Length: 300
Image (tube, rainbow, N blue to C red; front, side, top):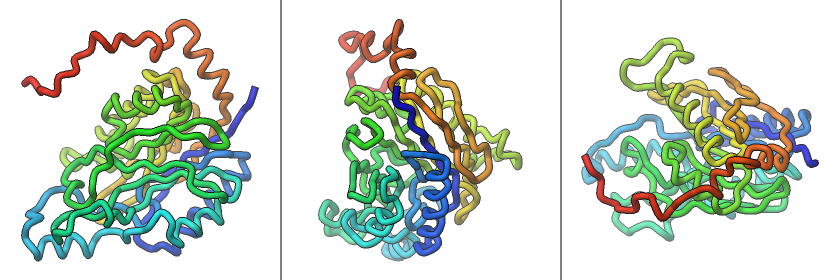
């Protein structure tokens, strides 16, 4: 029986990289003090998220120039910024979101995004895994290139996978990771409160309810340990719902920050939890993929 402690952060990260390093170091120290082997930070932890969501005429040079100037800094996977986080991580597995420089994959047109919204998993020894956000909501495609795959990877705490924010709204995304052997899935988000019919009380916000439902459903349907981090506070026009949490393979919430910043920390025996959840009804084993609709046609 191997018990590990995992921590999911709800925290506010903006454009200031020096402030981000200080925040990451503080959270890493808190996670270590709790005996954690895994710390999951939010989407866009280095450099912050977009200051607003929505479309706009990306072919207008003035609109494009304004959008580019407001984007977070584009970072390289082998650059000094992640090297600094690795020095903070040491033996701790840290997952965090960055704006990745994707110049080599982007087009030459000035109105073509050349960045990825990326999650990385690392320790002091180097990168363990990389995920580029596949599903892009509310005009995010005007700022980022889209990722193209979901892949699990091995870490010192076991085999895991990562998703970013809107990815978790698609059952196929988490299922692909589970089928690739992920027993722990980290979901890094910058999930805001509702933009219309907004509630002044975040606990009653309808987008927060969706965030929480997706977390529990994805854990339960794939029978995995789910570690969900999120931005908190405000950035630009966005107000984030926080609600970092750890969910067990039965869909039960083991720890939750609620609508405030902080760490959701839980100790889990992954092998025991998975074997117990999968003993009689093992969802991955009992799938009938030959019966599922595979057509890409969307019927109204």
